Image: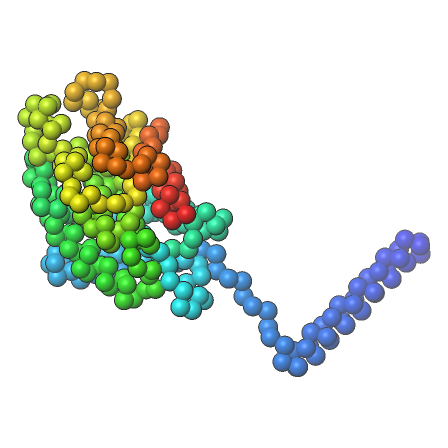
Length: 306
């Protein structure tokens, strides 16, 4: 038998003896009452699905998903900032869950709660500007959706989950018409929402469909900003994409989605908002779709909760 083989045998015997001793020590410690190893803390957000949320205001049942941070069950009495999401049915397409997991794990945002409110077949009537349907008659239920969120969803969420309250800890975001609806809710209720995000927001929303000049002049959100008294103080994050649409109603070479958002930002700056601090507008390559909005969602979340 070679020396190498004998050394290997000795090594194997030593390793076996060490393992036996380790097991014996572990058994003795167990008998002495040593605690078992703790399971690793969860690293993923969990989702509570409410498939039949009753609404007296809307006279119907709605779907709501609640995203809870990994630490929620083990954090005792800890409370969390909250984000309300319009078009909650798009959360998967937006990549919301992996985005929350990643940003929270890397500490780019704190743990937070997300209340994702699904739209239904009344979406074109629920989203818009409260009390002001557009030229086509859409948005007729926006005032009821506003009440649904403020009077039913938010009190339910506050009673059931450990939310931090007040505008400093409360944000709302949406895309397209849901972005307009989010902006309208926050603008009308700065005592409730401190931050709002609108991805490809429908700021074209207008009350007249005549000439290009009439359509420009009757944009509702722009009028709201120009005429607000007192002026709401919010943090506003806006995104548009170079492929949102092809329409250019005044022929100036800038698509309406970008121009409408630029005009809204200019109105905010004229009223005393500060670019980069109170209001942010980014334009990205992409389209009017969830894939593009999912790519920019991390930027909004960092802006809102950092």
